[in-house]
Amino acid sequence: MQTNEWPLVLFTLLCQTAVGVFLVSELLTAAAVRRMEMAEVLPLSAFLRLSILLITLAAAGISFFHLGRPLNAFRTLGNLSTSWLSREILFLLIFAACTVLLLGMASLAPRALAVARLFQVTGGLAGLLLIFTMSRIYMLPAVPTWNSMFTPRLFFSSTLLLGTAVTAALWAVRLHAVNPELSSGITAIWYRKTSPLLAGLTAGFLLISILLTVLFALRMQKFQSLLQASERLFPSPGIVLLFRILLLLTAVVLAAVLFLRVRSEADSLSPLLAPWLILLGLIITAEVLGRHLFYNVFTRTGGL
Image 1 (tube, rainbow, N blue to C red):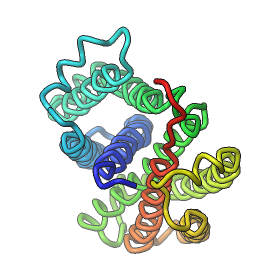
Image 2: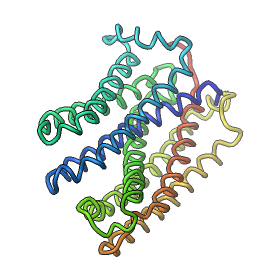
Image 3: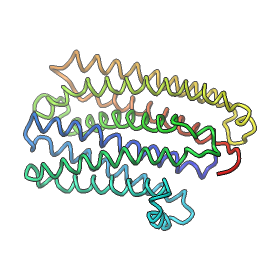
Image 4: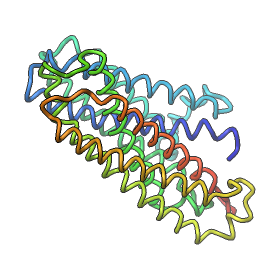
């Protein structure tokens, strides 16, 4: 993969992480509000929203390293009817704006709860459309290795996996700093109830990622002659694929252990910060390798 494509790897993964964390955390926040006082929910939701905003800003900043003229990015908004890139930028701006507004409205709750719901729904829809438009940018007729519905499946899979794992890790970080033993507090009780769900979802999304990785390898076999003629591939792409699968399998085992641990120790549970961070490290490494491979199978057959 060429050096100037690393910003694209980081940009796409960071955007998908931000959207995934938004979807998972806002669903959990909405569910938590129904079961506890708003005052108990606000500190954690504000921490998660600030994290989403920082991830989104990091993605936007990194994207400028790939653009020859960064200021032209905003000019492309005039091509919404024809350009998937223009739509991507629009939905990114809407998503970021909703995150900022939700973060800023924290002090107004619960009076502004109905308005917050509106921004939650709008931000979630903008995030989903952001991932879809992002995948459409790569579905070029002249690039057969990317031009299929397999591309959005890969992007949405990364969104769900990273979103769930990062949300769980951020939640553990926050509660570990505030209440390491989780011995009291309504928020601590809610964490104990949702931890098995997050661990189970992470394991499920990991299995989906493994399946998609295998299908990705099989799909690339159809373009073997084109890929062999490309100078952009790894010397041994099969080794990278195998390493990614091993990382994902290791992460599945760890997620399963976490799931069993949080279910069996519900009465006395620490945030399990170290296991969540190790799991997140495995997932991030596997996702970076997967996205690296995605860009390395680029091969043009002619035309646009």
